[in-house]
Length: 114
Image (cartoon, rainbow, N blue to C red; front, top):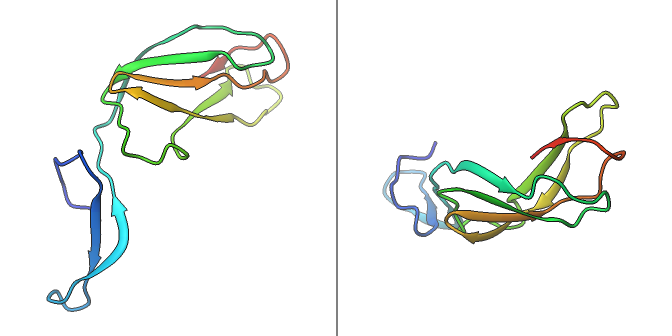
């Protein structure tokens, strides 16, 4: 279990010990972050083929996490066909802005949650 830590500037090295006296660097790191708050997004619609750059505005976005793991999830609002969500990589712009491109549409003319 991770201990509390206010240092969110840099990843923290992880050490292990079997006796509490001799510590070994695992080569792994762990990053702390402040939970971001999402405020708005723009635009609210785009063409069926996808590719619309959606700017997400909020607070406390972090650039220290793996950009390959940070994604936008698009899910159908009225999902009667049980379509799986679509995941698109998100790009860090600054502490208040993230961007992701819309995926191709599910079936046409649908609304999604982002």
